[in-house]
Image (cartoon, rainbow, N blue to C red):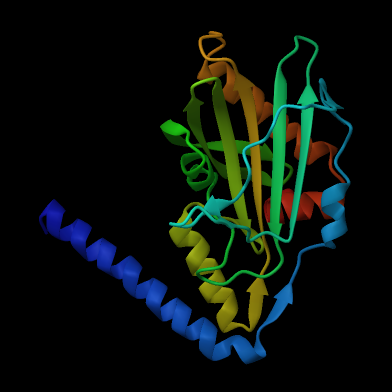
Length: 237
């Protein structure tokens, strides 16, 4: 099949899946029930020390985990958002953001942070897949660079959908659809960590990514069982 035909077919397949998933969710909505992996309060119990990183107060504004509609109105979909800044002895800061949603459906679910950054005026580049060590294996994550006139940010994140860490928006949809067939509304969590620099500081995205993946691996180790389940599902168990 020619590449262009395959791309068209794949796009139609994703659209069809989305439409079927939305219809199925509506049909089953009367018998669906939520299944949080742990009490939401566990998100507020973040460790004060993660390896060499120590939690500190910071006035640095975080990019909000919301997107805006065509009229500029913020679309807040999360039930709880937690943020914390950590600093290491050399002065490097990491900004951790956790955005939690108790019940997800196809068009009302945790979304990727690229959408948030783009809608808030950042240009994006360097998107790529990577992995983060977890207590029960390795989990899939994603990295990108976000740039604004006075701010440059290296971001690493993952999205947990129910028990699993999603590899893509499509895999999130599939998980929601699959568990919905069993009568379950999955909860979901965006785990986002970033290093913020002034443009031209020269530290570099590669070093920042290493800081971020090491930090996130140690965050999972330092977190209690309930918090770790919320962060990474079965991979963090």
